[in-house]
Image 1 (cartoon, each protein chain N blue to C red):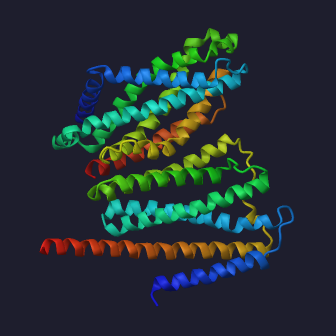
Image 2 (cartoon, helix red, strand yellow):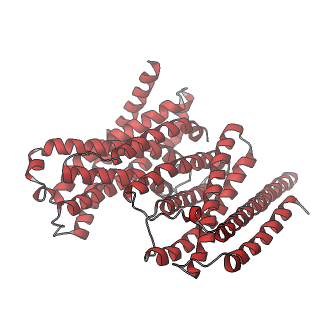
Image 3 (spheres, rainbow over the protein chains, first blue to last red):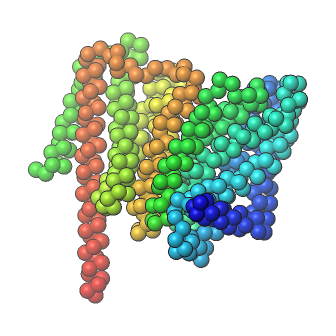
Length: 238
Length: 222
């Protein structure tokens, strides 16, 4: 119980820092919408007529945007910890490194999910996906969106699982935080691939029936959550 | 003669034998003709690349457990050599693909996973060079482990992505005996070359450390 209490407080601390000024959330939402717009300008104004082609476009726009937004969020989150040696201060309170890891994963995950809930409908609207969706899927739009957010959430969890460890390392590079993307992008390759495939399947058929990609997403998230959980102690210790 | 020199000499001899076997002993493949000769060095380099990054992975685990600098040095030099072998793989691979599948790049699972692994470890080296000396070792070990854990998932993902229809490149199983011998010798030669480079670079790193220690001592005396 003590563990849950400590993790809960750490999550509360992280979320309070993120939402205290609302600057970060506003910045990241605006950034994400801008990325979506750039994709729309590149592929639009007339988007592919075929549902599958449009689904592929939507999937690439969504996952590309969330990947960039995720990297900025991770950098920012660890920047706060690095300032004035806050992370060392936390360690001095006797908090276990694994609790720190779990709280970071959960808080960044919640922050990104909030962003995704806002940006996904906007992106789908910009890409005019409704006009090509079959009537049966249009009728179940809220349910479809919910499933889509569910898939994105699993991918985001995998991304956060590995991102927190890599970000914890890259913040120690004296102003070279941009290195995070060089290391993190190849590592998140399976997430983007599986997430995009699941998104295409959802947007074209409304389900994931017979789709192995969701298994890849889940396995990736679990493997990286477990391994990063074990390795984070070495990141905190150095 | 030291052990490193002996392995170096052995790998040099075997490389010449391998070149002879590939170009004079192994029969010419009927479909791809002489271009097929790339296969011997391409596949052997790919095997060595996986071996090198595998050694990085194991050395990184050992470093985190035992905290001995030598494991970190092995992980570092093995990564560097793996990246060099990667350059060979990604130079010969497209040439092979152009003649075998009429395209310069084929999203073949083995090739793609090797590329992702290669990029991951390039990131490892870049990040390592940016880290402070006292934190470099532990952080690099963590990255060395995470990077390699990604390989099976990437491989499985690419295979699924290709829909299981990728061209089967595991032709070594059906190779005629002359080709098999040539391939085995090439593989052995490159593995020995890797071992030689590993020992040689390890020694260089050790000497660098010794030099730094002497310089620090002299600074202290001054």
